[in-house]
Amino acid sequence: MNEVRKFTPEEREALVRRAWYSHDARWFAAVAFEHGIEAANRANRRALRAATAGEMRAVARANGVEKTDDLGEFLTLFEAAAAVFVPGSMMEYTVERTGDRSYDVSFQRCFVHENIVKAGIAGQYECAVFDRVAGWHDAAGLPLAEDPPALPCALAQGQECRRTMTVQ
Image (cartoon, helix red, strand yellow):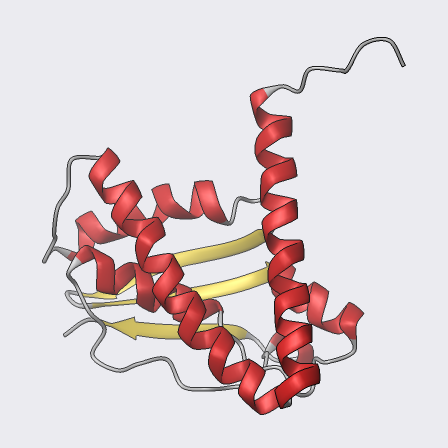
């Protein structure tokens, strides 16, 4: 090999994202091995919520938003954050506003679901996807009325993955 290939920005982004999610999966597996699946689920949900608050702070700051108490503005930031951190190549979802302070999120395809099935832990894994959404709410200054409950992956159980998110 005489010359190293230069990656496009999109290819670099995909490589970085893949490396991060690979690290995340290995971290989860290591915690589960050392401390049990219940501890791994708790730590994963807590860590993801904290880390994703940073995602939303960065997206909001880049859009000139410090804090929002408007659900419409939050949903615009939601779409911007999702495009960066969980693009269509990884997740297929819909967001539907259902009221002044509520909306439904429904996942038709989810990379987390696909990976927990491959890892053989779908029956024991507690979904942390909605903890990401909660972290985004925390960072935007529009907290949820209730924390997402610890539930198994709905898609892995052959159920619809839909939750209503209500802000305080």
